[in-house]
Amino acid sequence: MSVLENHHWRSTIGMLRESRLLAHLPKEMTQDIEQQLGSLILATDINRQNEFLTRLKAHLHNKDLRLEDAHDRHFMLQIALKCADICNPCRIWEMSKQWSERVCEEFYRQGDLEQKFELEISPLCNQQKDSIPSIQIGFMTYIVEPLFREWARFTGNSALSESMLSHLAHNKAQWKSLLSKQHKSSGGGGGSGSPDRTGQGTEREEQAVTEGEAP
Image (tube, one colour):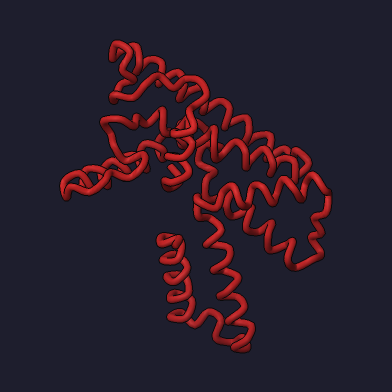
């Protein structure tokens, strides 16, 4: 369904048409641009992460990406936008932590509303069970790290890619430290009622992360 991503696409098209930014272009070209924008935005749906990651790994393994080919260029634009969409853990710690907390607070507000109206609480939205450090560690482990490792391979381990991976490793260590302190202060309960997750997570955690939005 990609409800949120479809909304973003339609909103983008609405703004383009209202501003008449593309009014000087032929109708066929405008339609093509709108469709390409849609394909790029819809690719950011977190539920399609494994689909795109598998394709990227296959291309890099087979060494068959040809950027002179329009289809391959579009695919790599999708990958680039996916990286941009989930890049918060690759920023410096102070900035990354602030945005992570803001996004998780939004998750919790959603969970509170769902509970108020007796709905099933969405993945990662239960502040009694899902602590911010555990959410971030799962997000980095299952979503961010796999994609950015492959992006680094694509760029030939560029300086920027290495810098982002370095920030990612540092930030993950910081969240693990916070989770450990949270766990100790709650007498083993993980701070918000969550288990100790300083190591690798479970299959259930991976599913929860991939079903939610990007923290």
